[in-house]
Each structure stands twice: as C-alpha cells, then as structure tokens.
Amino acid sequence: MNVRQFRYGQDNLGYLLYGEREAVAVDGGASGEVLAFLREHGLTLRYVTNTHSHGDHTCGNGELLRSTGAEFLDAPALRRTGTVELEGETIRVIETPGHTADSVCFLADGMLLSGDTLFMGKVGRCFTGDVRGFYEAIEKLEVLPDETLVYAGHDYVEEYLDFAAGLEPGNPWIEPYRARYDPADVVASLGDEKLVDPFLRLDEPSVVSALEERGLPAGSRYERWRSLISLM
Image (cartoon, rainbow, N blue to C red):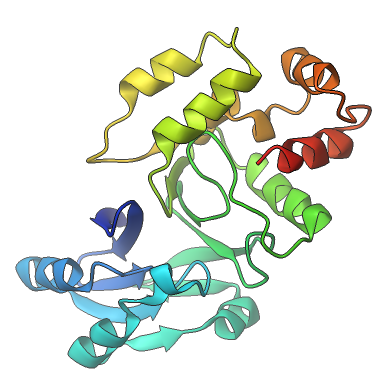
C-alpha cells in the first residue's frame, strides 16, 4: 500500500491510499490534484471517504465522485464494516470520536491517516465536549507500534511544537523534531510523537510538574489529560 499526501487551502492535508491499480481518497479536498495523480499513474479511484465530516475535509468529495464514479463510504458505513478492502489488502478503520462524533482514523501498512484526531505535536480540539471519549480514542492510537507513520489532517507543526515547548521547555527532543519538519512531506513516527506531544506524555514528570505549576489537576492520568485539554 502506498500513500500520497496533498496540501490544499492554507494548511489542510488530504491523501490517496493506493495499490497497483486502485485507490482510496481520504479527505480529498485537493480534488484537481488528486484526479491528475490518478490519471498520471493509471489508477482507478474505487472509494471516496473522510476522517470526519467537517467541510474543509469533505469539500472535494463531489468532484471526485462525479469525475470517477467511485463509491462514497460515509461514517455509518465505515463504522459498520470496520475495514476498507483495496486490491486484497485491508485498511483498518479506527473509531476515534472526540474532535467530532464521527471521527475515524485509517491504518494501512503501518501508516495512520489521523485526520484531526492526532496532529504533529498535539491532539485535535475536542469539539464534541466528550473529553473522556477523546481520551479513550487517543488510547487506541497510543498502543500502535512506535514505527507507525502518522499523517494528520492539517499542518500545524510549528504552532503545536511551540505549545509543547512552552509546556516542557527542557524537552531535548522538540528542536530536533522541528529541524526534521518538511512542509512538503508532513509526517512523523508515532515514536517521535511520544517524545514531543504532551498529550502522549501524560506520565512524564515534566508534564506533571508543568500542570501542577499552573494549578491544574494532575493526580491521575485522566486528570492530566483534562488539564491539558483545558489549555488548548
């Protein structure tokens, strides 16, 4: 399975997952570029789908569907099947409600398309208000192998690394991470995320101390999660 990242708008990132003949568009807002890539590589677009239903992620669906005759997989279909099959390979659908109630991530060949659930250096905003549900969603992702490559729905890298550095100014991993950042290919391993993202570092003494210094609850792992969410 291969992945191709497409940047569109100010900072949105969409994707194609593809094999030798067929492809799945995930958050294909860069519809013109996606269609050109399909033509150039002789690929048939089999499915169009989204990590969640916000308009900046679904805006390319109509053109892609009209131009290709692909099948649209909506959130109920994704939840019902739990997988997407492409050329005999399985793309796993992981339900991750929190940013939105219908948020999902896609896992294929060690690549995680995480939408607005998990970014580089931070998690997404919890627009549902279900902070516990969002916590449990991130727990599903934390247990994936450290070598899993994370492809997020936006490029907020600089802003979110600044947030991480403000919380943990002594974290030695943040600036090397920043130096590796490439806006033409926005990706990081889950292992690297665990070195810089405070939301994946809830048990680190430096994170606990930072929250306590701000007068925020930090007694349990979940309390630390809630406290971090309150800082967003």
